[in-house]
Amino acid sequence: MTIIGVLALQGDFIEHESMLRRLGVVTRQVRSAEDLRGLDGLIIPGGESTTFCRLMEDFKLYEPVGAFVKTGAPVWGTCAGMIVLARNASDLDFPTLEALDMEILRNAYGRQVDSFESDLDVPELGGEPFHAVFIRAPVVASVGPGVEVMASTRNDAAGRDEPVAVRQGSVIATSFHPELTNDERFHRYFLDLVRSSGRSAGSK
Ligand code: GLN
Image 1 (tube, protein in one colour):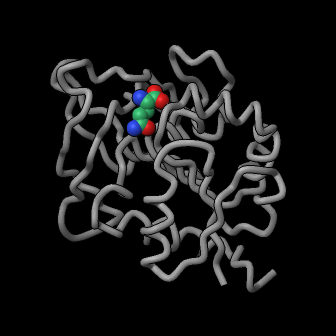
Image 2 (image 1 turned 30 degrees about the vertical axis):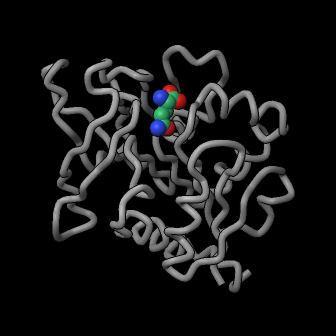
């Protein structure tokens, strides 16, 4: 049996859980170190990264979540979750988990495009483009050599393509919100990662 935890301090954790349940997966809301025990993977959802970090501090979750990531278990951050996983994020008065070697600029898509939608080419998912919903999304300003860019989008204001989905080992992050669409492919991709990591709870 596969059990996926969803950090449930703030943000759209319910939407991630519904998507995972639709795919037949058992989910667990994570609010304490104890809740991390026996999980096969963890999702850090979208929300507001400053609030997230403050609550992670209040709930004493920095150290346990950081330790969970270091075990090599698959972890996926969406939007604010991506910010929390990055090596470095602008305008964030809290430490990040430094699980992905990349620099983030928070809220940097500019006011007129705070929220937008875009059809992304994501080769790993195959088939149709992925319709991505961005909500006050972070900009990935740079990635280190160990980071694989799974999808990018054109930032006309900046005049360049910027990564919007990345992977480094067992950690993935998307600056958009697959949990707010009906497209299950990103959740399936994450579950494949969990299953191929051989960490299925049933096998422990
Ligand atoms: N703008 C938010 C932040 O900086 C992220 C938005 C989101 O998760 N949808 O934390």
